[in-house]
Image (cartoon, one colour):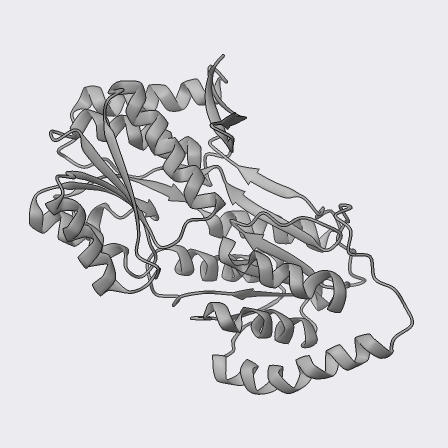
Amino acid sequence: MSQMYRRRQFLIYGSAAFGTSFLLKACTTSSTSTSNTAGVSPAPQNAKNFKVAIVLPGIITDKAWNQVGYEGVKAVEKKLGIETAYVENVAQADQVEALSDFARRGYNLIYAHGGQFDAAIQQVAPQFFPDTYFVGVNGTVSGKNMASLRIDHLQASYICGIIGAGMTKSNQMAYLAAQSFQATNEELRGFQLGAKSVKPDIKIIPSYTGDWNDAAKAKEATLALISSGVDVIYQWLDNASPAVLQTAAEKGVYAFGNTTDQLNVAPKAVLTSAVKRIDLAIAYLADLAVKGNLKGEIYTIGFDKPDILYFGKFGAMVPKNVEEKALQTKDAILAKKIMFEPCDENGKYTRCLKQG
């Protein structure tokens, strides 16, 4: 059975109880390690008593990031037969309260659905809830009771860069997201590398709306990019993503779907979609946790798990040779003929292309 908590519920409970947790922490004589030594999730006495929750930054009907997160805990419930819960539309200022509330309610594994939750996880996990395991989806956290679940966004966006470069007429493309953090930076980097492997002089413009779900802001940003000469847009938004795709279709430019297969949202605009089955990845880590095998590390999933990361349907406008090149590149990545390794570029950490 999956329970839904409203923001009002956890805020009322959280504001009082979180203050109490500070007092309890101050009075206790036991010490809690806050080092980054990787821990292993404790195996429960009875898996039926294991409880999993997820904190979502947007709504579960966005047909994108938040919906697949919700579907992830539903998959956990169905596959493992354990209790799950969720809270949706949690603002950044409320993240600590939401995570803390689930921990106090006895949830053993709590997913924070987005890299923007990293600071909140680090604030509550090691000091106040050492017996609860926290997983940052798209995060960078690791430690005794913290792990991160990541899709290798760079692999998919590299190929989208190749496709986009084969479709652009203006030689200008854009990457549109809500925020700049490690996951979006890697996705932008992959898009740049792929595009420049086809057209070295191509221009890639990054743009950020500041809000994953505001459709008006997304449409405004899309129109601004198009007016600047951009004719291909790689977007990663949540509830606002249809606004980008539909605006692209209205203006006669191309775009990429993200997270789910979004071809049906705007068939005249969507070239293909980088499908990321976060729901299956969430269920995979939950299974490890129930068995006591989840470690305090960063789990990165790429094309090597084809049920989790793959491409959606290609739009009718994509020439066969462009589609074939994309799929051949995917095979080359799987065969490690194309790799992306950590590197330093102009004093900044990133990932660089390496031919195998």
